[in-house]
Image (cartoon, rainbow, N blue to C red; front, side, top):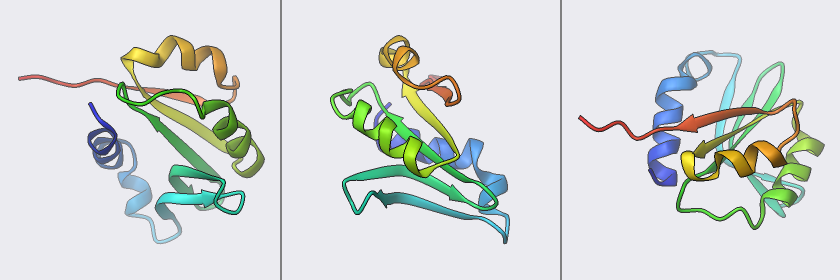
Length: 107
């Protein structure tokens, strides 16, 4: 699955309650640290939650910097990852981050 597929599925499967809440704003591509980094998806309500997407087509070259930016800005964070990078991501992200694994479903 590529980034647009993961993003679309994540919005429709994991974020509907936030999209349907009048007290919550969901933003794609939120600039962080004056544009040095971007959160793939940000959920803003009583918490600031950032979601980073790493598809199997991505690299992890920028992940360390992204983790630092997310840690500085968000009080909750998670990464949505394809199966290719799960082990590497699990070793890199802080324990307080969530990890979602994106699976392609074939029929």
